[in-house]
Length: 443
Image (cartoon, rainbow, N blue to C red):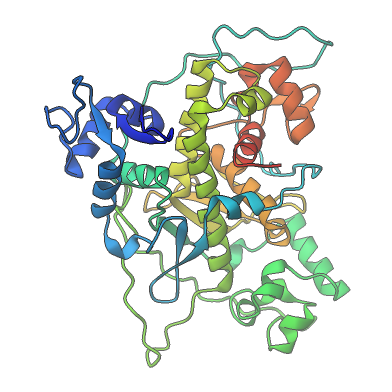
């Protein structure tokens, strides 16, 4: 990178841009060509006097923003957008100061993995790092395999990733799949009955979003005084009417759509229903989680302290592995469908299916299943939930690693995992969750 007199980055090479995106050179050049940069030609605007392929950062930023539909671009940097009832609303503060102000409970025990996730082989990006000697530990290992090469990144994904590097956050493709049949099952259903019987507990989204508890989520709001006062909830002994399942969003049958489809503006006369309020909250947290990941990508190439603390190594191969997982997580968060999970337990925040027909919807979006505990948690826990479970998804396929007779959840055990087994730490979901938090200025 070429830096100016103040130490700021002035220019970036094609190879460096490929590294930031974990992308092949071919797909990086294709992206640059699409936004109007022919990086392979001798052009004084894009190539330095030495002949290297250094692009001026300001020009790169201007061109990538100009290539995105203005409808999805926020009015300024450090702002995130969500879908309102009829148009994007860009009111999510993503400034570094706001991200650093989010509170994370460092003593909170992690219950993210209430749903089983298939174990996958770890990838050895820590060549030259040996397992440190220490007390005998019970580590159920994974076979170490060679790491994957960079992948071809679609131009639309590259636009989002590069814009994020400049702290510009275009609106991404986040949808919701609401189905009353997915509200609860098993132990989760028992938790609902407990809420209704006690008259004291209430799901967070019913307290905060009373509009929702008068229609599609009546059954979850039993015993909630705020909800019942508005005519929501279902009196004891009565059953909730099953709401009509909304149609799936339009889009291609497979593959990733280029951008969210512009919605037609609803009219009052048509009786178009308003979006459930919990959609907006989940969308805002999802956008904020992606900003955390984007900032981690900005800082990762120069970071050593957090890399050592959470992965037990500062080797460049390990750093490349971390950058790859962060990119995969960013890709998932920019193309995700949230729905209420039918297989929740009382201590489950959320879960995903990394493989199979339940992993994606018909539009090719990654499906993320949320549980009631997610809605009862604070913002910090919600962000951690999205980054933890999200890293199981996409191409990252992290694991909940078996370590010392248990699973590597929580800060203390993840720090020990990094010390005693860097290779396994590089495949552990919670390790990435805490790395993202700490490199963003936490705890």
